[in-house]
Structure formats: C-alpha cells, structure tokens
Length: 242
Ligand code: DGL
Picture 1 (cartoon, protein in one colour):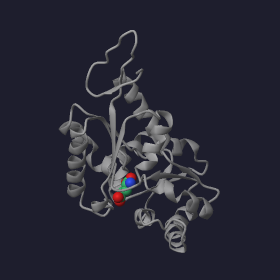
Picture 2 (tube, rainbow, N blue to C red):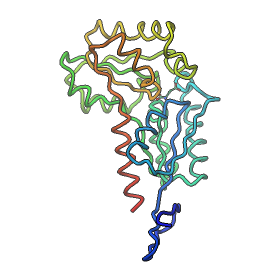
Picture 3 (cartoon, rainbow, N blue to C red):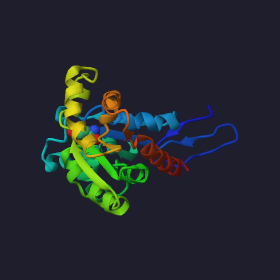
C-alpha cells in the first residue's frame, strides 16, 4: 500500500509505506450549480476526497429570505463537518454572499472557500468600460459584491442583472429549449444595449447556460470564476495535506 487516506491525524511514514493525509473537502449548493466548481477542483486534484451536497428541497435559494439561506448553510456545514470535512466550499454565490462571514465565526476550525464575483478580471478586460454581473438578488445586494466592486472596478460601470428563472431552467434540464432562449434573451438584451462587453457569471448554475449565452451574445466575454476558485481550494488542500 503506498497511499492511505486518513482524516485529522498526523501522517505517518515508514520505509515501505507512505501515508498521505487527505483533508476531506465538502461542497454544497442549492442544487447542481456547485458541480461546476467541484469539477474544476477535481480536474486539478483528481485524487481528492470530496463530498457534494445539493440542497434540492430548498432550491432555489435566491428567492428565499436570507435568514432561511443562513439557516440552511449552517445546517449543511454542520452535516459536512460531522462527515469529516476540513475544507468547506460554499459552491454557491448566494450562500457566500449571505453566510460566509458568519460561518467562519461559527466554525473557526474549518477552512471555508466562498464564491466571489469575478469583477476584477472583468474590469481589467472590458474595452467599453461597461461590465455586467449576472447573479441572484441576494448576491447582487450583498456586501461581498459591493466591496469587490469598489476595490477593483471603480473605473468601470457595473450593470447588476438578476438571472430570474435561470436556476430553474438548469435544474429542470431545460437548457436547450426555446423557453431558455427567451428567458436568457430578456435578461441579456438590456445589458448588450447598455454596452456590456464582459459579463461575470455570479451564480454557479449559470455556466450550464453558456451555450445559450454565447448564441445570444457571441461578442461578449463571459467570465466563470470556477477555475480560479478551484486553484484557491487546491492551495488550501495542499497546505492541510502537509
Ligand atoms: N448556485 C447558486 C448560486 O451560485 C444558485 C442560487 C439559487 O439557488 O437561487 O447563487
């Protein structure tokens, strides 16, 4: 045996065997959206020990009161901690906006990674000086977005647009339907008319709609932060693995 998984224990080594500490990584989202992030992480750490929770009973989070989203986040974190997770990824922009700060206080022993809208690279790459953020209502209203925007994107205009109905389209497998085309078009067209040339995907469900986004707005650059977040998870993972 040359590789063994143990959690929360010091790695032991001997001449014949190398025991590798693998910190279990938990991901959660209201549904399948966070899979875009988990997949990006597994692409760079394929042997990682990963758990994924989709909170389908409460999906979508975006239309729920923030206290309820906070309560779900606390409960799901607790479940993942009980299952041995040392790193927890809020693979959901809505939960990150509503609960990341409080979760860090409630679970000081856990390393959290949250989603942050990719406003900085969007502002750097825009030529028109108008960027869009597509997200749920709580993400658009959240402190995380306003702080990132004022720190990195003061010099551009930011259009905040709610992707109403997008999560439902993804969850019901209706991405390749006329209904999806119409729903997406009604949100994107005003952004295009306002001159957006870069649009940040501020909800982990939205990358599933990329084929529709690209068909409607082929000239726009759509930014998905999943790979950047995956690199952050990998850095933490390597740190804890020792
Ligand atoms: N994937 C979640 C996010 O990133 C979806 C939110 C929802 O369930 O409304 O915000």
